[in-house]
Image (spheres, rainbow, N blue to C red):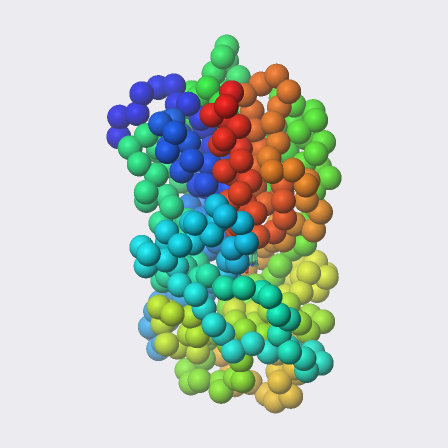
Length: 337
Ligand SMILES: Cc1cc2nc3c(=O)[nH]c(=O)nc-3n(C[C@H](O)[C@H](O)[C@H](O)COP(=O)(O)OP(=O)(O)OC[C@H]3O[C@@H](n4cnc5c(N)ncnc54)[C@H](O)[C@@H]3O)c2cc1C
């Protein structure tokens, strides 16, 4: 790749917000360097793949499950990805794990990515075009301004850039650490953002469990249970993702993850009123910054007198659509500089 230096914009974080910004900047002819500490793009829209000796390929969407699209921009994206075969509507059998009740109305179409949630990021990243470069497994520890240009320094001391402007899209505590040395007001706004953590258990069985739902919500410990095989394009094995409820996850965040996964299975068993067979696969992931509880309430943040921006779900709230809208808004502000 031969992108002229300096880049127009350096983006920290290649989740939905960073990718939305990169895509918009690319469409306006701007060059972009995207850095992410993960092994792939997508952030919390993520899929864990496991090769099991007896069950073969397993796939767990252990972060975000599905997107809903209310605004024009995200609706247009979902339609574009539907035509490309990358997202499809999902119509799960729904159940409430607490007191029996009907599913609330007006939730709209649930869009899921194919063949896993990580395709939101993979697909967007693969179409960023000639003037964008994505570097993964790069953890940015510092942003340095040299003259009119910015550099990102990673945890091994390597410098990435330079670029004329910077957009940081990491969860608020991580963004704040990078932005605080440059803009106190942005740092203050990010400090006010709070998150609920989520312990996500991933379990699979050798035989179907005969569950009366594909998507269940709402016991005191369990926020959500999803049958992965009910989503189009997934392996057929009986694989469940169980999300701990926010308070329960916070109380157990530092416990042994497998013990937490077992506790969530026990809770499902209690809710179903019957025992569950021993899973053939059991694992857990801890999301420290899963769902924004208190958002900033602005589309994006901008520094007063520097070409420095922040976006992400910390701005509008915990949804793929909000992250996308925030990145888009920051990109438009960068173009307008
Ligand atoms: C368990 C769970 C369930 C959810 N369910 C849903 C759902 O069903 N529907 C829905 O709409 N939303 C859901 N969400 C919320 C949704 O996933 C997020 O709102 C959205 O993905 C946030 O996107 P983002 O780009 O703002 O942040 P992220 O996706 O977190 O992207 C930020 C990126 O920054 C990178 N990063 C962080 N620090 C650094 C650094 N120092 N250097 C380099 N890179 C860095 C990270 O690796 C990450 O890729 C869920 C989230 C979780 C965790």
